[in-house]
Amino acid sequence: MSGKNIPQIPPNENLQGYTTKLSAVLNTVIDGIITIDHRGVIDSFNRSAERIFQYDAIEVIGCNVKMLMPDPYHGEHDIYIENYLSTGDKNVIGAIREVQAKRKDGTVFPMELSVNEMSISGVKMFVGTIRDISDIKNAEQSSKDSQASLQAIVDNTVDGLITIDRRGCIETFNRACEVLFGYEAKNVIGKNVKVLMPEPYREEHDGYLQNYYTSGTRKVIGIGRQVEGRKKDGTVFPMDLSVSEVEVKGRTIYSGIIRDISDIQEAQLRLAAVLDNTVDGLITINEYGIIEHYNKACEVIFGFTMIETVGKNVKILMPEPYHSEHDEYLSNYHKTGVKRVIGSGREVVGLRKDGSTFPLDLSVSEVNVHGRKLYSGIVRDISVRKKTQADIKKANAELEEFAYRTSHDLRSPLISSIRMLDLVNEDLREGQTDDSLEKIALVQTSLGKLETLVKDILVLTKVRHAQEELIEVNVKQTIHEAIGKIKGMDNFERLKIDFDLSARNTLCLPKTLFALIVENLLSNAVKYQDIAKPKSYIKIKTYNISKRFILEVSDNGLGIPKKHQASLFSMFKRFHPKTSFGSGLGLYMLKNTIERLEGEIVFTDEDMDTKFIVTLPMTN
Image 1 (tube, rainbow, N blue to C red):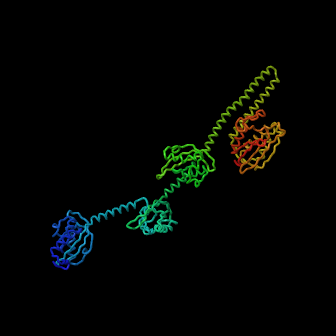
Image 2: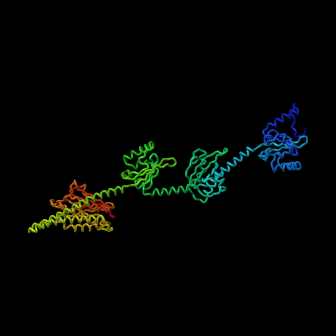
Image 3: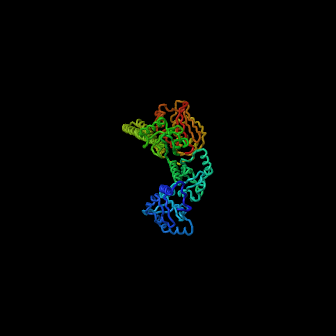
């Protein structure tokens, strides 16, 4: 064999030995090697080629190489060789290309093919080096499939996904982000991510990245937080952002998961508005008793503001002994699971900011929020309810006493009068006129007492059910009118009346009720004078404190014995029955009338004087 492309045989090497050595090399290489002549007929077919195509060399040598090709390459191959031999136009020779090949069993597979030309004894030959790339192509396809699946997931996820490089430039912008921000991906990819941020975050972003690279201090990376985003139309919206740092082929990129929380935040605001405007107080504490939520109703109930309570132990709202016991109760519950309050309602005592205590209804429930134990308490101030209950109880007791005493006090003078009239009849039959007149006088006295009692009962009923309109009442005029009504009482002429009327002269309240208060106080002072004293007096004083009207009536009469002062304003209490008859309802009616007007009455006996102090609002 001779030709310019024939390799030189090394010195001291015969042709047969060299050929054997070369054949051994060709049969051990990984790639398949096939040689064909200018007609496309296979001249050699190494062992790797046998493995790749599943043919033995003896089956293919002497056959056209196109037997190893699927359509359309099978039909085109001879034409390609003829075209090359006639024109010298190389499409494959000298280059590596990817083509399809066919095995003995008919399966088609991808391969890399490089073809070189050589001449042996003036005859053109072609050497093809072949590598089966099925595994590589399968791996590539798997990678493409994975990428396609990942891209489909990314594009169809509900949350927005953005990736940026170290400079902050956007590399990935999924469909959810397009919907969220109003931009198409093509319009933001390559731009700095701060285009999606409102001020002041927009100006701060690059500085944050630079600070992270130089110091390693993380403010967002690796954690989630609530931030604000900016849409294409300029609107700003709240969003949850979680950022992670990843290495991809030696490059650092940052991926951000974004969720629009506008609806959640709006729902939270609506819920907060509902909770803050509910009549009942709502308190939420953690497992350590620390207050986390405290609504506006609680501010009204306890007097503490939200700022003063959130972050503090809930026991600041409890008086002793509950204050000291609360932490231990929580600790015991966590250890034993035994519930004393949780899951039920009970009546407890609360502590206001001003130190006052009050009754409240408390119901506590346990909730689990993101793995955290929280306890929510619904609180209702029941001071008014308890007072109402006490008032009802008191009213019922008074009603029972009233019914008993009234029936007794009504029957006594009636029975006495009936018996006395029977005696009068007997006296008249016997002609004892003088005795009859004495007995009739006693009957008149008895019936007079009965009339007094009935009048007082009628007045009491009037006070309880009066629905008079509010008018401007002239204080001085009302006092002088009351004095005019009591001038006919026994021993009135002994009295000296002193006036000190410095209060504002008009009040806005029901005139009849105010007149009743003044008349009651003055008539008592006249009725219970101490006749043994040489002089009797009444002192009437009025003045204002803030927006309150004060009326003081004092006298130097018989006074109220110490032992009776505790029951001074109770029903049917007579402290001087021998001095003057009364129903015992006067002071009781007086107190009821004053309370109807949202006022109060106080009794003192300082300096040997009896003094009643009435306090009323200027406007009722």
